[in-house]
Every structure is written in structure tokens, then in C-alpha cells.
Length: 117
Image (cartoon, rainbow, N blue to C red; front, side, top):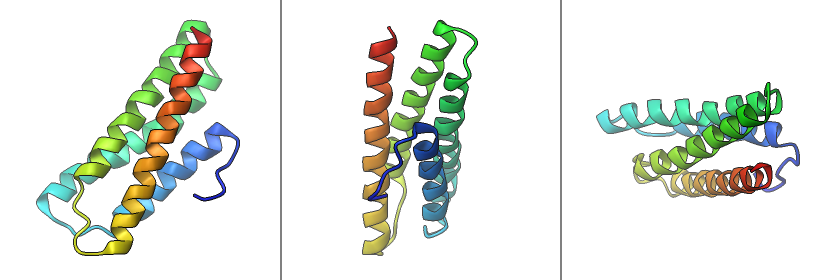
């Protein structure tokens, strides 16, 4: 994720793909199974709503879709905080990278929303 794509749809899709790669590394605990389900759903919702915002039927629809993307990015931060990475430093580092990317996406969506309102 060092060279981040300029296109927001692509960047959010890569985020969702990276989350899916990350969760395959996690220990299969009862808590992780439930948290991973939420994380995967939220991470997929970020690019899906970004695409919908870019194809919005009107101004209000566009703002709402970007708000949903922002909300889902914030939710990803929470689920990434809660998952148990076990004793693997590499996995914990990847979690931190993904949390940072979710945070940056949240900031981008916030900026877009402010400009649209």
C-alpha cells in the first residue's frame, strides 16, 4: 500500500482485497470468526458505496453514498482493532497498515462530503 492509487474506486477496492488477504492470516478463534465477518462486510461496502456515489442519481444520493463509505471505513478501523492477530509481528504490522488506510479513506471521504455540502 506504499504507492497508493490516485483513483478512489481503485484505492478502496485494493483496501477490500488487502483486508481479505489479511484475514486469511488470522487465528481461527470464536471472536475472530465473528469479527472477521463484520470486517469483510464493512471493507467491501467501502468501495461498493464509492462506486455508487460516482454513479449517483442526484446530489443528495451522492452525498449519502459517500457518507456510507465513510461510516464503513470507520467501522473497519474498529474491527481491525478488535481482531486477534496472535503472536505474529508481521500480521500485527499488516493490521496497523490496514487501520491507517481505513483512517486515510475516512479522511478522504470526510473531505469529499464537506466539499459537496
